[in-house]
Image (tube, rainbow, N blue to C red; front, top):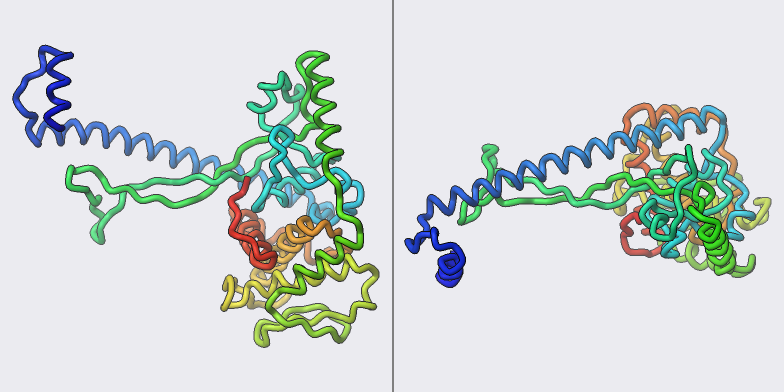
Amino acid sequence: MTTSSLKRNVKTRTSVSTTPMSYSAKSGRTTKRSTASKKSNSKRNERTAENLQRGDEELTQHLINLLHQNINPWHRDWTTFFGKGPHRNLDSGHEYSGSNPAILELWTALRCYSHPLWIGVGQAKKNNWLPRKGSKGCAIMLPVQITYPKRDQDGNELKDADGNPIMGSFGTFKYSKIFNVQDIQGITEEAEAKLQEKIRLECESFVPLEPTARLEGAERVLGAWSVPTTWAGNSAFYSPSEDRITMPPVDQFNTSEGMYATWAHEQVHSTGHKSRLDREMGGGFDSITYAREELVAELGAYLICARLQIRSDVVNHAAYLKHWIEVLKESPDALRKCLSDASRAANLICNLEEEQPM
């Protein structure tokens, strides 16, 4: 405590002694505050971990249920949806990023939504809107920082000169619920009219690219990827040993969009090379490693195609979906890890900075 602060205490509290505070007394007060702070951080970290586990389990089970029905939520006709734009927040207009577009696509397939517009409860309330009775929120991922006391090699907490614990931190995620606009209604007739007008204007504000522009954009982005592509044969695949992609000639594809979607899929595989993102890529067709890598490639290709406004004509064999179920059942956080890897791969190919999910 400084001399000036001690004088302020004397003026305002006559019972305070003018004798300088001893180090032990100061240390004791600091310890109480730091202990309370540590307990608060510990409880907050526990809540974050529990939230993450519940969210992982919920999303994973929903996806497993869809896959059991041979439904791949990231493969569908995009024509109608793209007329309304990407997944974004109705209130702010902000596009959801990171892994969240793929997560919202899962919710869309699960609940048959026809709008890519979403909103949080707090944002809705300020506009006199509320979730419809019986509706349920959809979880997305938001970044959070976890703090913890640093320790030495013997497990003892590290302290600073004043005896306070030295804290470290790392980034992780938590799940937060938002609602699709189809599950939102106005509290009054006036508020409902305002809601419907806002939805209409938001949809009309999005102007999709013309088909030619979409294909040119896809060629520009995918054609700039550093891994070479050989256009020959009848199969599309990536060879880690040669670090090369092989694609059938363009005229063998039913559509140009299908060709670019397939190319994006193989490019995502190539990001796993040890010189790039260094994912585990070994194993045969029936292995968990192979199935996990295929799920990453599927998710990554979806994220790339969404940015490029390219629809996918790639059809996944039922065996692929079955193997994805095995991956998801292996660990509750398997889907989140695959989403994270897919997002990093898509950012690398599209030459984007690492995005935080929003």
